Length: 75
Image (tube, rainbow, N blue to C red; front, side, top):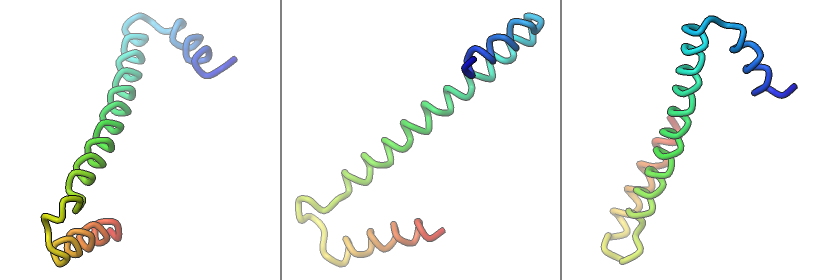
């Protein structure tokens, strides 16, 4: 029996209100997973958009940006 089947076996023995609570809990977990995936994607996109591709920033500005990123990672 896989995990989904085991969850189903437990949920079908619950009263309707408790089964609904389990369903809402699962939906919450799914929503958090979707949000975290989108947040990671958005952070990566924002970072990529700030890369010095067009030579529009000085070396000092670029170094400062990378240093701030390194400092964040150290936390």
